[in-house]
Amino acid sequence: MTIDITPSGQACGATVRGVDLRALDGSTTAAIRSAWLDHKVLAFPDQDLTDDDLEAFTLRFGPFGDDPFFAPIDDHPHIAAIRRTADETSSLFAENWHADWSFQEYPPDGTCLYSKIVPPVGGDTLYTNQQAALDAMPADLRDRIEGLVAIHSARGGYAPDGTYGDDDAAGRSMQIRPSEDAYATQLHPLIRTHPETGAETLYSTIGYIIGIDGMDDDEARPLLGELYGWQIRDEFQYRHRWEPNMLVMWDNRCVLHRATGGYEGHERLLHRTTIGYNADVRAA
Ligand SMILES: [Fe+2]
Image (cartoon, rainbow, N blue to C red; front, side, top):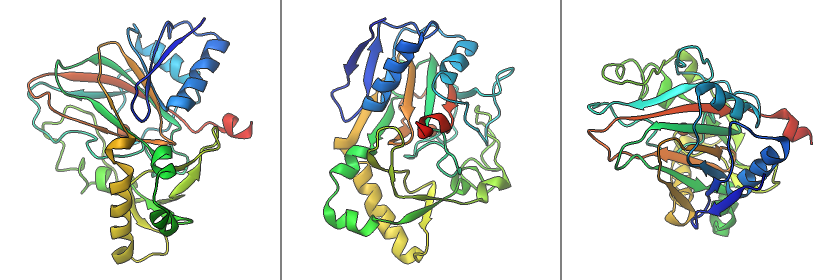
């Protein structure tokens, strides 16, 4: 099967046609993986997937990730519903830039999102290419972050006093489960080497990153803020526009993403899985 790959023309991202994700063979899976590593975000329009199909597709690229703080949908423990009702007034979910679950010891390599109900306007997902951001970084800024190790935590979002904590439950249609577990911290270098491409990238950003190991907050916060300003510059971004029945997979190891609004009065529903830390690709 020959797949048709059309780059977005932006800083990352490509659309893939000519493939049925329900019927992948080994060579097509390998071609998709290669395109995924090249483009970092792949969109597959016009895919008719059941929840079982979504899980099977995910498992072609690694194990399932460990997804805390969400209740899964019924009968599919690895699928979360990203849902917003037409009249919902809670704050927009995932509007801050992030790499999924970067506060884990072994964060998910990737995320798959399959669109079921797409509003007629708004609801784009934004991505920013962190390999490109590091490549283009001024030497002065790079010198100041070289070798630094970031402190990650989910507390700002998922602790009982976080954005999606105990005071947030009323009116939110997503099944978020805040927990004391969110106060845990995890260290990751700010600059990491992608295990499959060998490219250096920035990893995660302020939000899940709450400090820098061994550095006073008075020094770390402005540096993380300056770094954030660089990470999200327009020239590193890709704006993804959704269509119904579209699967998007992205590489959390080298892109950040965020949700956007602008669809008040319209429902939106996507089903999500994570591609977990894949020891096999690291052993190769
Ligand atoms: Fe996310």
